[in-house]
Figure 1 (cartoon, rainbow, N blue to C red):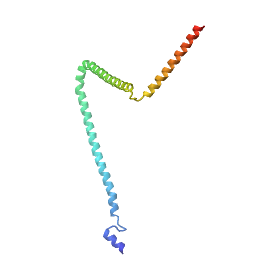
Figure 2: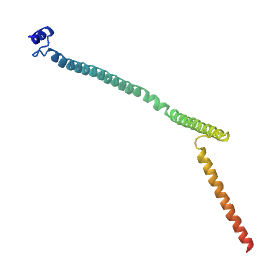
Figure 3: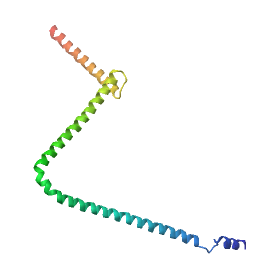
Figure 4: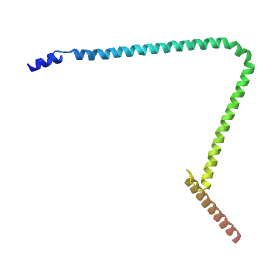
Length: 148
């Protein structure tokens, strides 16, 4: 009896499926709403891209005669501008590289131990060792030649 009263009062008895139906309808409604929103957004973007394409075609159609008339001037000017831009970019890049090398050298010479200083010291020691070995070998051969 108590179970029956709870079912009537709470509205959630054994045979009641009202809550499940609402839960099943809600995802369907959300899915439909998402679909409509996506279709609207996609359609508007498609329309905008079509308008931009049409505008580009019209602009090219209008500008083509002007470009053909001025092409003997525009093509060399474009080439010159491209070369100037490449020169400035190259100059800037090499300038930055030079500044970084000078900065590294300053740190190395002032004893601040920049990255790679160990490798440089090791290479310097190996080079000095090889130079010493070559000098000793040459001196040994000179001594042998003088003794003979």
